[in-house]
Image 1 (tube, rainbow, N blue to C red):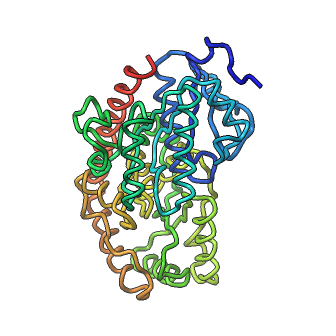
Image 2 (image 1 turned 180 degrees about the horizontal axis):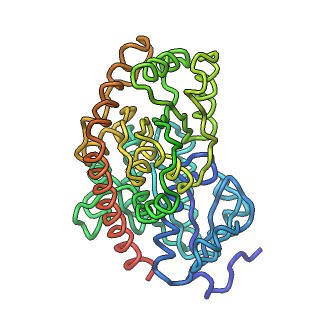
Amino acid sequence: MNLELNPAAKTKTIFLFGYFGAGNIGDELILTAFLTMLDSRGAPFDVIVASGECGGAPAHYAARYPNLNIRVIKRSKNPLCFNNVRAFYSSCAFIMPGGGIFQDYGVLSFLCYYSFLLCAKAAGDKNYLLYQGFTGIKKGFFKKMMNFASSRLIDYISVRDEKSAKFLPDGSFQNGCGKGIYTDPAFALNTAVRKAVEENGRHSGGERFIGFSLRPWKGSSADDIAGALLKIIEKTGFKIKLYSMQKKTDCDLNAAVVKSLKGNAGDKISMVEYAPDVFELARSLAENELNLGMRFHFTAVSMMAGVPCIGIAYDEKVSKLYESAGISELCVSKTDFSSGPDDLASELICKIRYIVENRARLAETVEKFAAGDEKKAGILFGDFYEKCLA
């Protein structure tokens, strides 16, 4: 069977792969950011997107990205499945446009994604890894595998943080022509998010809300979290919206928290329906007085929406984000509700009051940071585009 298509088609077709369509808003942010930056170049491209939610070419793609002909195929971790093989042979480039794809806590997943690089190379494609994080690779064997890939399998790499840059051999990555520029691709959407928020307005019906985005973590139960939320409501007078950044795990946690409340919160706590659209999320977050979250991209969207956000540093990415923005005072290092509602809740209440007292200044700070990182994301993409796709 000959899978080779017209050679002319190979010059303008790219194959995008990541955790798309898997119920994770962070990964949808990455996809949206890449497509937005690519479309802004004005050149026509055929784009194949592997997604867990396969439905052909959604109408909103055509409206949002007029220069791109986007086709969605069913996402599979098997690089040799028919859809993937056909995508390899019909494209000139295989691109992972962001995130921490390679992590060794799941050996099979690491080997699976590594094999995509091998198959793409065998099909004659260029391999491009953009805005990547490699700090999830801890074991020496997998570090050696990634070092080999960076010099033998990957044609261009940019990384999202300084630690990931140090992980790779010298000269194996291109971050803004080596200028040490690092950021997450999501910030490329800053201008578009701000426009969506301004068009929508900031309507909260006179009520004051805090947006919460929590994730499950060892040692804390839904009862612990519910107790902390009740105390926050009691001491601050705010109502609480519960957001989910991941469709399954976060939604299940929020439902368990609401169930644990047993009606004690009345109408003071509500769940926001999961929606993977970044602009819908940003419009909702902009209605809140402040937000509080554990996931990196929740804070990123809140920043782009111009709303100060308290971070609970579940991992280093979160604390580093606050440090880079110059607002480390808004980041909580503790990640454990299990000692009861009084401990962590008391610290959060102090930070909530701090934001209320300094909201205008903090809003200006996060807006300025998001705008600065939008420029960084553009520099990184521009370097990649000129060297690899122009």
